[in-house]
Amino acid sequence: MTPETITIDESGMTFGPYPSGHCFHIEKSALYTNIQQGVKMAEFLLLHADSDRPAMLWVVEAKSSSPQPKNEPDFSQFIMEIQGKWINALSLVLASRLGRHRQAGTDLPGSFKTFDLSRFDVRFVLVINGHPKKWLSPIQDALRKSLRPLVGTWNFSPTSVAVLNDELAVKHHPLSRT
Image 1 (tube, rainbow, N blue to C red):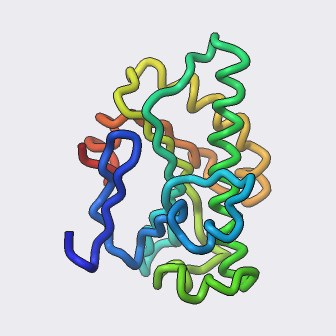
Image 2: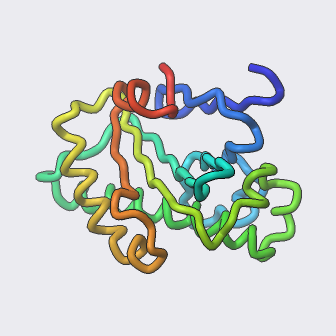
């Protein structure tokens, strides 16, 4: 790993390497340290910013397992936990951009300080290590339903939620390598 890249080890997976100016390990940041009491947080944020398209902010959570949908109330609690982590991560980065946290100037990576807040989109990504593909769809459906108010209010893409296992993350997304 060079100083210009970041890799993140979480839930038995290695994510990256990513350019340091486009990856924010929010869970390990000073911003989060100052508010973490009772606030759960996603692992990291990844910003895809091309000059010809609106920025795409990926809010990434990694897990080593998940309950099956038929296991209530565990499944509902799992969905609420992931939803809360994603919303908290998005809220913290936006609050930082709005100057609500004094550490934002030094803690936010370069591209996070400049992307156009009026045109960005979000992809909420959950990666579950070793999870069977056939179990991903019910989790994605439940998370989409739980985030529908947020996605609609912010006018994010209806496909803003992605649930992947480690295999799909490596094959189809520049998220991880194991």
